[in-house]
Amino acid sequence: MLEHNEGGALGLVLNRPRLIGGAAAVPQWEERLAAPGYLHTGGPVSEDSIIGLALGPPEGIDGLSPLLGPLGVVDLHRSPEDLPGVGSVRLYAGYAGWSAGQLDAELIAGGWFVVDAFPEDAVAEEPTDLWRMVLGRQPGLLGHLDGYPDNPSMN
Image (cartoon, rainbow, N blue to C red; front, side):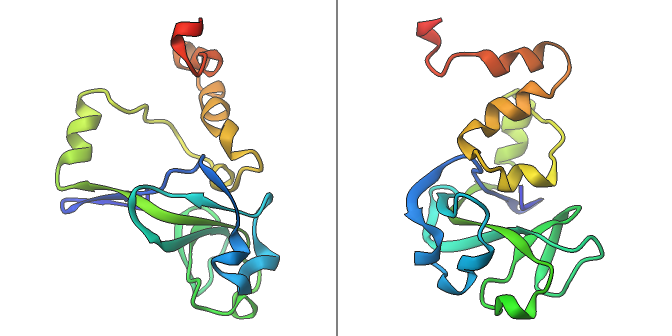
């Protein structure tokens, strides 16, 4: 979740890599891309826009808007040389958006698991395994969902 306020919410889908190198979208950041270096689908809204998440110095740095610990939104218009200590950049095309009150209603209805995030989740080397990885570290019954089949009818 990048932003959530009375006007709505904006977030990124973290586990949908495309088979396109991220350097094609923002070539100047190629050397700092997190493995495997793919562009990711961030959501269905404004898929022609690119958002970069990155890990940076713990004390913060101009050009990296903080989200969680060392994780932040990187200003991709800046030169990487102007942002020392910023690395593990993950690029997302598009974002997920919710209108005012929409996400709150989905949360109240139980439509989402709300769990603690780790900064490294956003740049996980195997993003397609992220859902299982995050669920697997949860206590109780929720932690057992990491073994749930992709297709429940195959259980």
